[in-house]
Image (cartoon, rainbow, N blue to C red; front, side, top):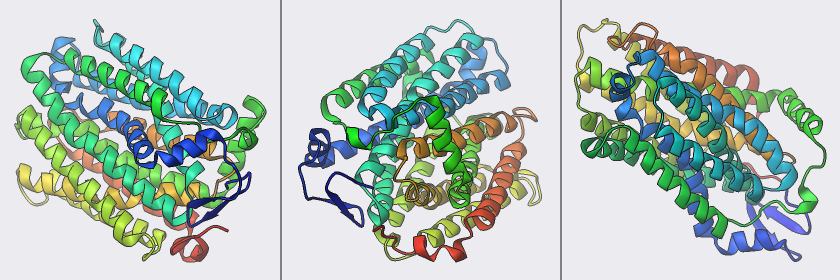
Length: 432
């Protein structure tokens, strides 16, 4: 909760006493800061999705099997998961700005080395480092939102971030596909390096400090671990954390498998794959905006979340039935339609799980954000190699992983969050 003479009403921070310079600057540049935070949350899908059309090419260029090349995705995802555990508590202790800038600089260096990787093993190693460093943008962006907003306004802001960051997965595969027209897969990492440099400069110039010294945590690793232990002991927080993580794993199963499913199984070109991926991302962004502009404040956050989980469950079941041949041989269009529905439903699931979890943790936003992100990325990293376990010529493993994650997400939501008992946080929540 805001301190030092600040008062919060449904996420709007009003001034009763002089604020720390960083916070005042941040609010005066509200739109610009929104764009900066959107850029930080867009970095992971840029790092992942711009590279997706190149996956089949990398297998040949580095003389590695598809399962090994998919580990370059898993390594980046695992790095982003583990990095958040470090950066989150660091940002609670030292503020948001310094850890973010350090992480961005390391991200740029690691991405530049990825472009020079001579073997798949080298690429996997530096993708891991790229993910570790890129974690700073993910976790600190969420923590900054928690510093500045609360209640309904926080949920709306997360939906706004989804609109901005959602442009990344729309354009990233398209950019990646066009890069492959004029150069090889290494050019993708050259472009990512330039993007990282530009974003680092923007953060340095325009993002002020949002966590004043009096709200920072003293203590080292032990204190951070105790804080995280306390967060995990909160059944409802843990429920939203696991629900969001499992929903993200269903999403990442699609991200990891779709280049091979669309291009290798159904014979689409890298450009067609990019267009389909962009269309699915538009669906996610559009539903996220419906959530933020129309549902939040009118419908319980838990109810909107429940709708999203239900749609994910039904669409993943439909995908399993189609890919396993229950309806006979199906073409690309029905599969693409099922994936579009599943992706779109993430626009209800992802912002609402983040908002509900972070509303319970104003005292440790960095650590809570780290746990949310780490759980999502670790579960996604486990799901990623499973989608290729039966080879490159069947989409059944992808659908099985998605359905399993959907079932478990619903179970965690109902069993741990118990939304029927959450009237205090469900409808148009406000914090005193």
